[in-house]
Length: 255
Ligand code: NAD
Image (tube, rainbow, N blue to C red):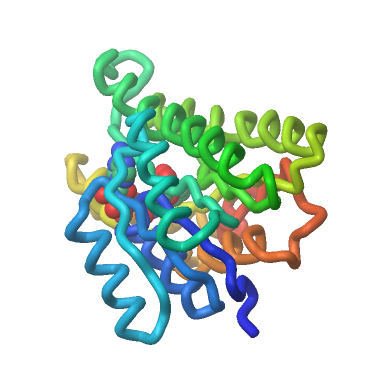
């Protein structure tokens, strides 16, 4: 028996670095997986890889900022897989900019994906899960707890996800829906999100060295490290955990 055996799990941004690792781990642990992403070909590639490995997976095309797109995507998943037990609101973007120089357009783009997208996902999932319960996991960041001068919109959006999670958790608890809502706060992981942000700086190597030096364990995390935290929150092992924050950061925030 897998740790999420028989559950139906949907992961947004499921074709990216952290999301794909979550999809693969969920499938290995017995879940049927909906790989939801704005990039249909990349979502299909991850779903195909899972199927080739003997798992069950379907691709779903979804832009998390699209309100109607959410209704369609959840209907596709429940139509094909029968139900929805787990939603991971994982899709996110990072646009560099300080409180002095960030454009309003970039601020709004960030908020649309990282905060509106999570709200829309939570709302759609509650509506789909409330008859039978479930687990919603929101991928925030250590940057939802501490800030950086270069990522004002990202940090604000991730802090928003932290308390959005708690409000939704309390609502679901109060209504006795059996739906738990938690957030995960990873440190830096070498995915496209970090690689692209670093590449836009004058000295990417110096930035990455500086980041590494802030990690007491002397290394960054891998996508699987985050996926295991998500797996725990998605599984029945965490059945009394809601409104909680799980940090996966190699000791970064302990300093
Ligand atoms: P990534 O860039 O590797 O992957 C992101 C995925 O999201 C891509 O597949 C992309 O196509 C998809 N996506 C982007 N916009 C979308 C939209 N509007 N709708 C649907 N899908 C969309 O990023 P990642 O590093 O895997 O990050 C995943 C999550 O983890 C993000 O929320 C990110 O903020 C968070 N996070 C990442 C790190 C890190 O260091 N990589 C650290 C902390 C938190």
